[in-house]
Length: 504
Image (cartoon, rainbow, N blue to C red; front, side, top):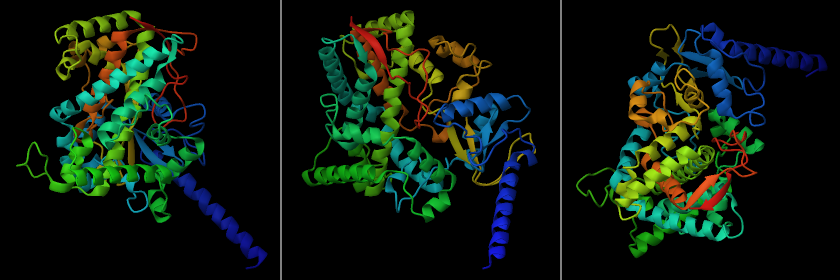
């Protein structure tokens, strides 16, 4: 090829590339959808992870496009058009009414090269439906009750460790204790391990759990690339999960399953229920109901999902909650009074039944999740071309749609004075007066959070045991109003959870 030929080829490639980008960035305009103008190569993701969290970006775009006459707005991830839901009735339509068009999340699944991605949160279509029906019986209130003693014994260790450290200082970074509390519960219930991270802050299970949530700039870029170009990523055999993490959790589950099967060991935990499904296709407490068998790889990937869904989400919710309670002493005292009053009826013991009587506690947690939803965006992918009701907008098959949970939860038209921490927003009367899809901390519809009961249970126990033993107030290191770490996959407080902790 001559120099002139090469130059002409190069110019043609540039021309085609520019034309492609311009055409992509005109995607929403051609369809009459309000959109946020984009710039190459990041689209609408400028400063992502540096000065702004993705959930905060989605919230910003929600307010910029809301009220422009359409239930959907348009944004761009690099050059990929993505929809942004702007209307709660459309959110309801997506999550429930027309769920058959929107039941996939569009996450990366590559079980050949990245087997831990084959879990319930990510898989699609009939595979998701079948697996959900098999796993749902393992999350009933009866099964949660079996795991309750594990949580209580772990909370006792939490208080013991805090009491020891309070002899040195009253200014405590509670976030680290709460992370160790939840990882010990998850390790026990999902992996059958006594992690003992409350006794040993350098425990391997804790270190690997934190690694699983690493979202450094390099990791974040790789995740963005894989999510944006899933087909190409599968062709290139890219892994979303770090190999050391995948190897670690795969080995642990395999070894534990083999040991339990060989020694006929049974425990009241989630892993035991998965083993029953693997070997029998039914649960021991309901042997007449054939649910269907699952594979060892499904046991491993869904035990890993238990870690992803239960570790950081619950510990971070507790951090946000205790930070808010330290700033709102009246609410803190009212909640402590409720906890003590309820427990008096149960011989001052935290029981499974006592949790359901703590109504104000549930309001406090819900308000925490309203103000600081750990998962600030829900994602859905259109399975077939879909015409949005009462519009002429057609979403093409494969289009991803985001539901901006953080934006909805901070919308003053839904929650007046949204920065105020006010548990009365979740009184029965206030809930009835609001749109039923205005609170989306656990999602809604058939694909809502399957582990909601478990997450709420360990969160409640962590808050109860903390408030029963300690008065919380701000210290010099407390950061409030709460700002978010910009580079994490979930919302978490910047500066973590420094508080002054005094024994009651």
